[in-house]
Image 1 (cartoon, rainbow, N blue to C red):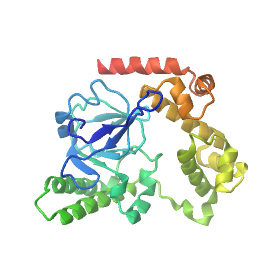
Image 2: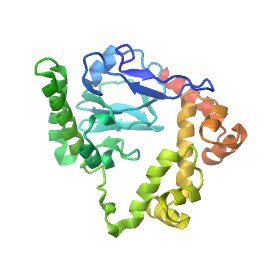
Image 3: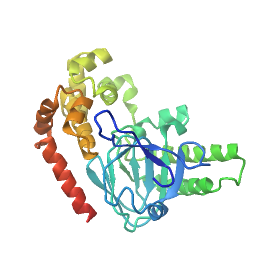
Image 4: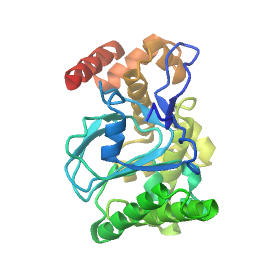
Length: 313
């Protein structure tokens, strides 16, 4: 997709490191931030990127793949996911991902920006678009209709010029929203019933998780989030333990570690990562990273480079 302009890497930062983000740039004539193709066409058109050699990166948009036949392997946040026939891969913006060779995988491939969705639809899709939602989905009873909707969306996308442009826009967006709503209310996406007063602790944890996602670079202490959310640090700790079995501080640290791994995977230096995540210096970051992963940043980078080279071979 580099050659046809769908992805554009962001510019290097002041430390000379290149943020691992790819922005969505649809080809000329493609309405809205939505592109629809197939896995096989995608790989046929782009035999040199980003899987040869495989390298991790992040995108600012969603991409969604239905495997209709074969098997697709794809790394999402350092875990290799196996997607079989009838299953969907949903990679959200900001997730670290790394492609594997496509093998025999076939099926629709949908790329879209969050802004394509209407606000009322986006609210209904909140559980599925959350950063911690499941990457591999098995729709169950709705699987057939989800596949049919995806195929209709592919057909409509390819039919640019067959209808008035405004109608073409509306149909594509409606089909995309119908597909996402089916997937969002399948068995792999838990319903968010915790917005009711009966489950205040779960609601508090979701607010805390959203706040961490927004502020983990500059806010590193539970007290900071307690003030932001107008509750006590004990309330946040209890909410975190009820939801995931760890304290609130561990949730904050885990998000910082995940971001550090993403940036190191993308070639950032330990010093650049330390500055980006609000550490005083590289030594403090190194101790933090080693305490949480068991390896120093340099050793982690060397190991990832070796693993990537082996995978490429």
